Image 1 (cartoon, helix red, strand yellow):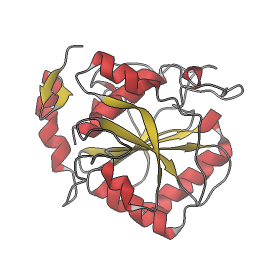
Image 2 (spheres, rainbow, N blue to C red):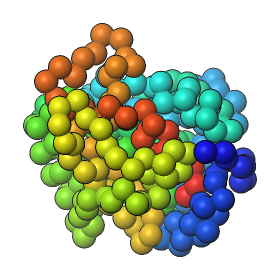
Image 3 (cartoon, rainbow, N blue to C red):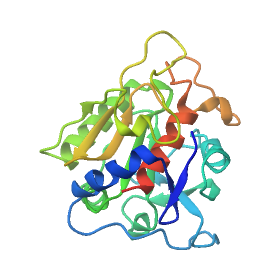
Length: 234
């Protein structure tokens, strides 16, 4: 799919009409354009890998989708994920936060409040249960219920805009049979949280990581590229 450039970011002709609708659902105030962090020029798109619940994080989320985004769109990326504490103001330097891991956790109120402000101001959270971890899945659902008390996670149909930014993704593919639908939290017409309980970690493009027993999404790289571009269009 060929991309044009809009305000420095790529978009398709089909997205032009949807951009206004996406923005219409945003809360007052916006997350500013990413600042120069980690020694990268301000024009480089950067993505954060969250440190949350104190010290919990994951090294098993592939950053290969950042390279793929450069190849198949007109953006430039840092080609790596930046570790950022969820409780810090540094999250506002990024358009997209990635939250993943395995096992149980609990978000403290301070982190819930900061995440809610970030997303309400136009930021985007991509959440992924590492290796389809059931404990992480349950903990994440509790965290979202605590953070967004009036906004439930809802299943996303394949006709959602997030599946049709760079690539047209009409079907989820997984390692073992039928995958669970992706879920999200909307703010008006804008999607602010996207979650996969099967996992979008794309461990085949990581070193020393293996989702050996889970039902990880196997076309995660393309999905993650689409999510990145969607987050830039808000």
